[in-house]
Length: 170
Image 1 (cartoon, rainbow, N blue to C red):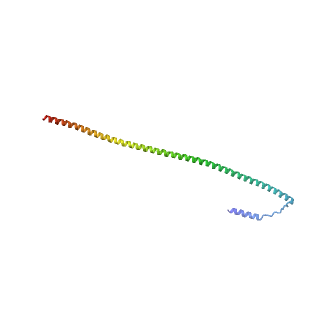
Image 2: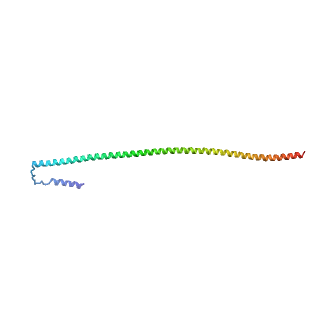
Image 3: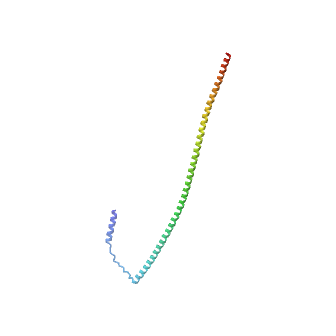
């Protein structure tokens, strides 16, 4: 930092002691006509530049309009595409709702069939239990009948023995 200040101070001192220049060059005289011609050329150049600027502005305006039109066309095209997609999604949604309704109907029918099958199986099971109970009752009755027949056979044999003894004792 100190070097920078030293260099700046040295520059001020050298410029302060600079020797004045003694050579003076005399400028050539410019006539009014040359000044007017130069101004005319400058005005013509300015008009040309202004005309070019106006043309560029016009081109920019046309470019803006063209770009806006392209953007509007693109926006309209995108809106149409989105509307088409929306309609397709609505169609798919309707199909999905139809499928869900069909599934609900199928599940209801399946539940009804399974419920009926369960009721039928329950009825068959109850009847089977009744048949088994009747079979057990018949088996018990068969055993009782066998017992009674055997008892009847023994009683008959005993009765016959008693009759034979009673006849023999007479």
